Image (cartoon, rainbow, N blue to C red; front, side, top):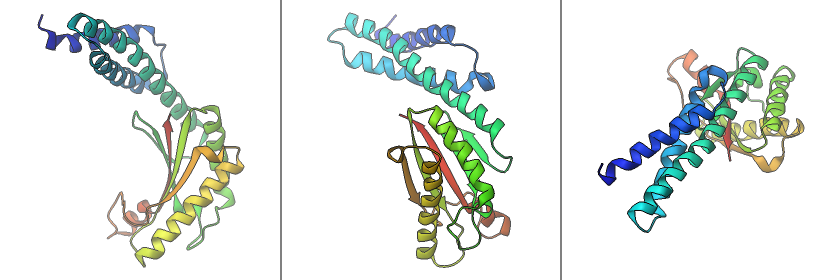
Length: 216
């Protein structure tokens, strides 16, 4: 077997080992397996880079695949579990996406705020406190709170409004017990639409606050 083929074989072996060690996780463990695969691959590359000769590189690659796979699987498993819990606990109007690297929790601004207001509605605060409790149960993460608007009105005003709304949601998370050191609030204004601003439905989708939970 030529040496350039060995990293792939070692990575696959490491992934097989890790998969055999993993317990069954929510949603079939898809993100857990993806995390294991990515971790194993990165571990192989790190192991190869640290070797002085072919034999040492092979040994380091094998170790790196297993260690990296276990770390990646742990991250994926935690995201799977937190996603499952949040889907059971939060309202149906809250969007939750697990992309394997982080969780994106989307709250429509129309339920969060009155028009041109930055005060979080009392009905929405319960969902944010539920989210805060979840974030506190998974302490090894950082949280970005990102505000978005539609394109109606002045762009500078929209940017400022999105920033102040993100800060308001972040304040509720902090009131719910999340450490301020874990949270960053960001305003994006109208710059990152997820739908067309040419329709009322699209503009409604674009008015949102995203809470992005990323493992450290």
